Image 1 (cartoon, rainbow, N blue to C red):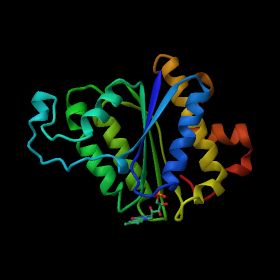
Image 2 (tube, rainbow, N blue to C red; image 1 turned 180 degrees about the horizontal axis):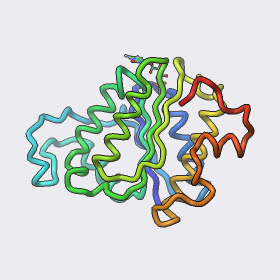
Image 3 (cartoon, rainbow, N blue to C red; image 1 turned 90 degrees about the horizontal axis):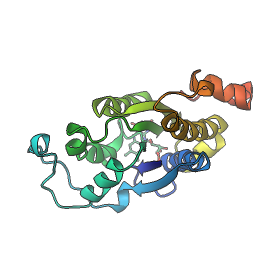
Length: 209
Ligand SMILES: Cc1cc2nc3c(=O)[nH]c(=O)nc-3n(C[C@H](O)[C@H](O)[C@H](O)COP(=O)(O)O)c2cc1C
């Protein structure tokens, strides 16, 4: 079983990167293989809207997107991490746009998905909604999509709830797949309840959603 993490922030060591790595570490500990893709290191052109991929299942633009797409198609799960830049930021939008050949052809269907959003304060939930919409459109099985507050790199490390819930999301992704695309019994309750029960009530701060 393989979980791929896609990090869509230009910032090295940013908050969304920290949380996606936490998700992948937990998934690995739970028995999955993992791989991380930094969109900032890839050559990804903007979708030009030709729409030919809807029929052909292939994009005519030549860049790193084909290699990324194949990695996603051969994975069992995808966790996407974005900073909030108005919504999911230009890097995230460019990446999701170019996934159209894969989503439209159903090649991401039934993979487990999770979304991680970090923002200073404004529109973090809107950004999470964009990721959720992407998972629904792709017919992926989004087990969690969370938004946390953080401004400078490393802020999320101080938010114990954000770190622990990211860990549980990674574990959940691996166990969900292992359990035939069903939530394992232990994760049948909402994530915040699960995290509080496991790590203590005090861990749940007012500034996370
Ligand atoms: C160009 C730009 C736009 C931003 N827009 C928003 C925004 O709309 N809402 C918000 O809450 N934070 C906004 N932020 C703050 C980032 O979301 C915040 O610093 C976040 O921690 C970045 O995540 P990262 O460390 O993973 O890159 C913006 C930051 C930049 C540089």
